[in-house]
Image (cartoon, rainbow, N blue to C red; front, side, top):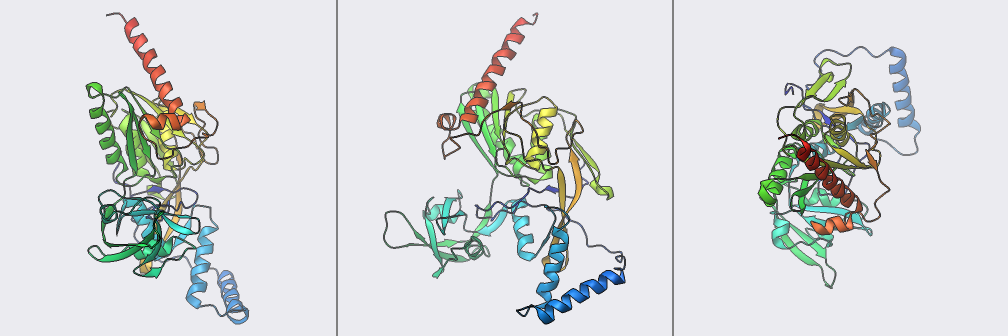
Length: 415
């Protein structure tokens, strides 16, 4: 697998808001600003742009700032290319960098919008919010004594972030209490991990990847190692890998996750116009499960980097895919920095699974198609997760059946 490629990230269709990152499923790559002079814009097109700008400035019902007009013109130009390309202002660029690196400076609270308010999903372990006693379900009503904007998350998120070592007062309304509770929290560097794991029962593990960031590959290896240690004889007979509603993320992370289970062969290829948009990434020797069986859960919310993993594991016959057809996003975006902290996110490649198939607007059909789970994950873990999540239960049963078949074949081999 070549490491000479610039960092490429696969973008999902849309933005998922619900964590303290205000997680924008974007792409990040270091690409220098172009040094060569751009081709001159044809004078007819330049005149058209100037005419429209002048008409808007003179005749639009409200006065519009020139800077705002030009930025919106650029935003519209890039957005018209495809659903995944976009102009990013400095704040949007920062959000993408946070989502891909998994690092930011703040108090460590995952939040979502609910009931016209900002609700705490959970404090992140080890952060000042967790140590101070912030609880899931708390409603954030004020920050530093100023009420939060209940029409969106950005107000609360931006005001809780800040330089490490500084403090912020967060006021929350908690069920069962009349007056708001005040917490003075110290900001620090927060690491958001995308991998969560549970031991379903002895010998069988569960790993959920919520998105693909720069730490996902190493976090997966740590999670599997921990599950092995907790299992009899330090071994896993099977693993459920949950990629449901995972909208994507860093391309290299998807390759690392695929590589963890595949010994050799192609993981993904890509093709584009620029020289470095054409590439192939291959697996390296080693299987983190040591041959243990693998079941992967997918659905229509599994997109982009998730589909790279699902496609590679399916094409190599390494895993059984269970669930529903994936989203179908087969393109790669690269973020190209501009002046003043801005950037454009541009589709630069289309990618293909090891068999050479493009999943663009098609998705990946699972090996076992199941109806939509009527009892989705609801904070359960371990054996309770199997009981509450029918798709996890189906996957575990499949792993056990595969284990019985494999054992039977092994016993039939001449000794």
